[in-house]
Image 1 (cartoon, rainbow, N blue to C red):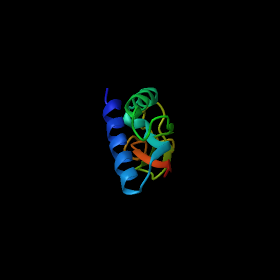
Image 2 (image 1 turned 90 degrees about the vertical axis):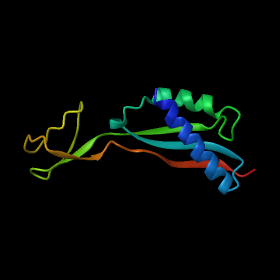
Image 3 (image 1 turned 180 degrees about the vertical axis):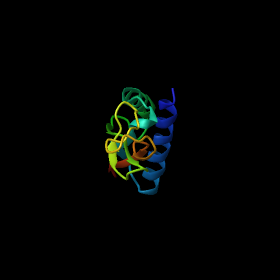
Image 4 (image 1 turned 120 degrees about the vertical axis):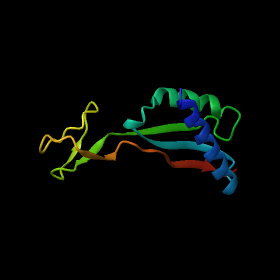
Length: 115
């Protein structure tokens, strides 16, 4: 389960930024996760709750924005949404495409309390 590794990294980043900015407690965290990452949001939430225990993020709200997959056709230049992981251009039917969104995995923001 690579979700635990993701949350371990998340906690490391939060702790580092909190120390640098004099943050006493993290209130909320917003993650962006692209669907191509194959990450289960439910598992991320569970791991976050477990890893946050006893840390500055204990009790913090975790918001996850799942980013759909979009691509640009290299043949005709059309931008299209990828459904069911089938990279077929809606304009020309071609399958040579560049992924534009769907690979995201980052902390978009977090809310904190300084005291």
